[in-house]
Image 1 (cartoon, one colour):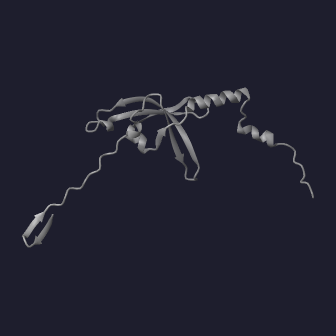
Image 2 (image 1 turned 90 degrees about the horizontal axis):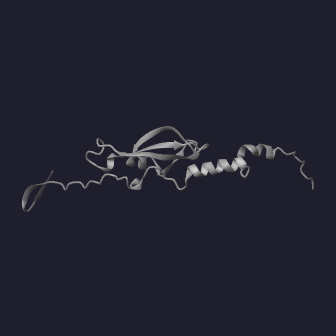
Image 3 (image 1 turned 30 degrees about the vertical axis):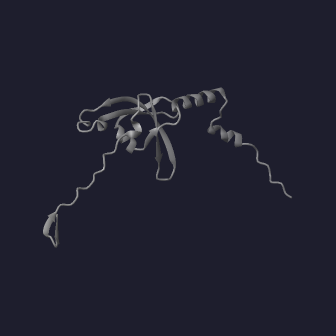
Length: 148
């Protein structure tokens, strides 16, 4: 699309084709399997941050999404883990593996279900005291300050 004029004359030169980037791949989740736990950090507008944990319940291939690209058709269903009971709650959510990566999911660094169940067992045994009991511990009589 460019005319070049030099001592050899005038000629038309096509520009070099733009190098295209390969599409993103779901390499983070290429080894995902049913039963894996995922963690997602969620940051609120008040700068508070919490981590939600999910369990992978199903894996399948969607032939419509994967017509041209096999990686794009790999799907996973996840379900949220309740932080109080360690049981699954809510409904299943379907995501592509690339969608999981783009939405900020990562593999969980701990077995969250076992952690919640162990915490509940320790609380029922009395080995761990919940934060709601801190009020009773702090409700001791106040002493006047010593005067030196």
